[in-house]
Image 1 (cartoon, rainbow, N blue to C red):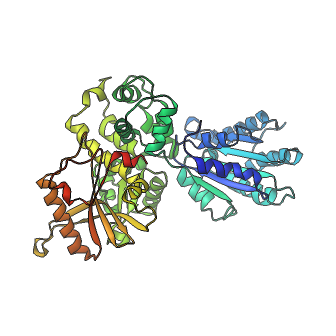
Image 2 (cartoon, helix red, strand yellow):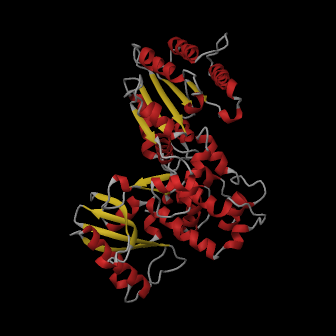
Image 3 (tube, rainbow, N blue to C red):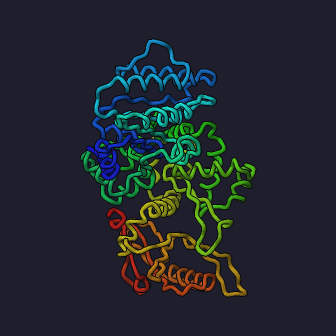
Length: 480
């Protein structure tokens, strides 16, 4: 049973009805369910399918040949074996051309998974793929080929396939950037496996693992959430104990500097500037750094945003990947306590992380927040904002982690507060909110109405301060 992915599955299945050849790219971070989506959409029935080999298990000098040997194996398994040893990608795709020419099948669905791994240094893969598509598939009288290429290295797919400048420029007929599950889809997935969790527990789990389907597939029925987290991350030989290194190594050929950038971002919740990244990591400000930041953003680990009212040069980079944040808070320093998570409940360390992680979950559910506000169809700009104190101008110095500027001349100033029960607003919250509003009006000179908006797990305790809120969004709203 496939959870979610309805539009993506319908699109892939509709390719069978097209009268022209189809070239589709499917990409998204590791473990997100790309391969599962493609295979389920076509009922595991392909004219030819192949998966590249991770180059980290291969000697540098033998990588190209190992990839070609594996391609030859896949040809043989699909009933299209060749007598001679493959020594180039031109030769490999020639064999695929021969198989297509000789086949009577009405539609020939070709699925090449982990394409980026096949592109070893000096391999000639891309030029061979260009020739295969431009010189063979589109030139055939029979418009019968559906080519689907897939990779976890999103940045590679963007550079070489989606935004290709050479022979593959504008050749795609479709693309799917597969994102993580939403909270609602995670809930549906657990229900399909007969695993019982409250919505608050699902939210806590999402704060740790994000919406990565593979991680959720490891949750065991009949165990509490803390028991599951300990078994997945903290017990001896836990399945996700080494996921951090595996994740970044699978995506990046030389992952060390990428991990250094992410580590620098993990230390500051609101995000930091490019210059601050350079100072923290010792990485020089260069085109290479720009490339690494763009690659991390394409893979969904970080986001780049320009604070409201500022210009491009003031942009900030922020860590948004839930698992990576959890790693730097709890997994980086290995513990010998196999019941670590059960023993950490309600500690200051966990409470601090919970507040930060909950904010990340809210940022991943902006459509649900807009729906709860009744503005799904209203054009909006979702942003953050901050200013430094300036006593001479009556500016206190404020930070707003989420604001929604609306076309109907309203700005929702959102506070995101994780709580184990109804949130209690007090004089301190009220004072801080009034200062934020004052600073925002003074600095931005906005004429829009400012709506105080609270996003919290349950709701609010009714008191005089709660009456100042224009909207309250709960954890249940995030599941819609």
